[in-house]
Length: 555
Image (cartoon, rainbow, N blue to C red):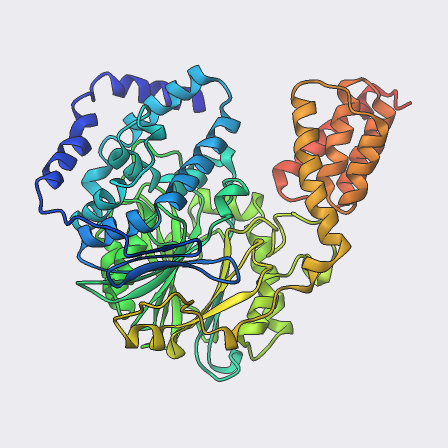
């Protein structure tokens, strides 16, 4: 299936050489615009400033970007302030791609296919955001210019989130979010929490960027992401409207359209209520399936906008003071959708949804600290220990960030590294947007309201988990290259994360390949007794067990 897909893309490339130049022609037109000359006013290790815009590295390790102006100005200022962070993110992303595709020849071929796939993406991104991307791309690293032009490259990278879950082999996303109000909230007001489980390597999540943007048009907003990204995955605007993204089950798309982060950015910048958010979402053709949780201070509750290339619907909770979202759709339009049904049956989305339901039953009257505790929970249903890093957990120990909103109060909490375990840093949009000038080298956070880091960070279990992750990469490399793995290596590896099914599955598979079927069977049965992540994983284990039992020689 995948080979046929790429073959079709290659055939399409024979007829699309002109389309490839569309973004570059657009860039040439932007160059003719009046572009201001910028020069840094202040430069220190943790602080850069230009005019009234700045970048500050706070004590919790978050980068705070404060920027405003028209689209070109925002792009240019963001570019000069985040130049080194932008280069770091590109390097982290392309390094991860090299891990997936070690061959340089295949990398060049994949880049060619990526260009074809994204050949018309510039036609689906609003002009003001293309101008912002153009300004930003002026400060892109030159290290990857051989692959493609910086402006074109940035346009393509805005579709990376979409491609991450469209091509399931990358397994980059599996987010969980919840909203509560009325009887489920401590003060009756809307409160929202979400984990953004987008993983493209540890380095990619190292520099979390809190962007505070005051554009010339629309509403000011705060969003959390990474340098080089003008789209939005988590954010709230000055009107108390919030947007978060949760991936759904997608078919393999044939061509890029509007990146979902750009749709979310436009909603955040131009909507103040559900009606306006829905209208913006409806006008954009997208190329993947996504749930957008929209929280509204004006309405005092949250809804889900559920989008795919061919369907659109809105889901609201009936007679309940809460709304939950993982990675399957809930609205009427998707009740008979085969892909959505398969997602519910085979993935870990339904399990995490049940976990959120259980958490809301156990932790009534939610506050920000209680929501943080839910987002950080590493166990399964009924508080069962299911192994660290299990994607059935709400806290999969790979999140780019966790975030909490109280829209009516205009409060936001953003998790510091690692994952969502670090301190949740509070930002008060009322205070931040009350002034249009912030010049001193200080954080914009309201640290008095910070939520302390998870105590798990200081535990032996956490240190063991981090050692496990390192050892897991070593084990995977040796399995891939058919290297010998000693018994002591296996024992140490399993001891670091003893409740996780995969440590037994990998050892069982290793023994199976060596025809040590009795030892393989014991490991695979141990794996099967654990909380296995997906239906496909469990079927795979069962298949190996069946093969061994069929042989009848389990010594």
